[in-house]
Length: 269
Image (cartoon, rainbow, N blue to C red; front, side, top):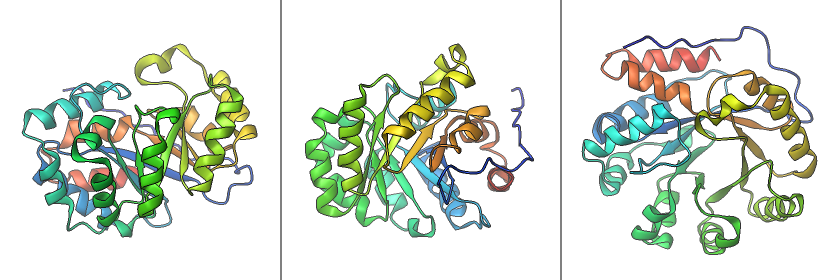
């Protein structure tokens, strides 16, 4: 297997535009290679020191037909499901992890999983486990009323996605609602390999336009390491970088020092 190449920038991040803290969010596919090993590794990462770095995790429940993931993450999802991933096993294995050691821990799942488990019970359970936020990428705002009401009931903070091509008036409505619930917006610049057809200048323009509309806490989904990570910090509070951690897991999961490799990467960001 070809070794991954991770570029680490030595320069300091640009000065934030009225942002006091800029945070990184790394997506972590649960259940790879199996739920027991996944929980063990995650527990060690949660308890590891990250110095002054603001590192948060977006924990993804594997889905049989993921629509917004990169190729590496799709591979992890497929392998986790092949190796017997079940939501009940996930809850059992994660119940003893103290997620409060991180500033924010997001559970990411598609709607049908939460629906089958019973949305009220699902939200209540993950709140009791210590998750701070939930993101369901395939639920549009106009169908999110029940989700938002249950999140408010249990004090779990919702994250809703917006895109640059969404009507400005709709973005403002979503911004105001999510801000009232102390939640976050997730700006999806694009998904998967479509990133290749855009350039940094266009993406930066999108980010600037959205930042002028929204005053809710916002993170940007840059999918993988690029100049967009630095650019996003000029306008928003955080960046979701999903692909490189997935590649590390895929490449080094059998390495007994994988935790050190991951933490070394996170600390040197």
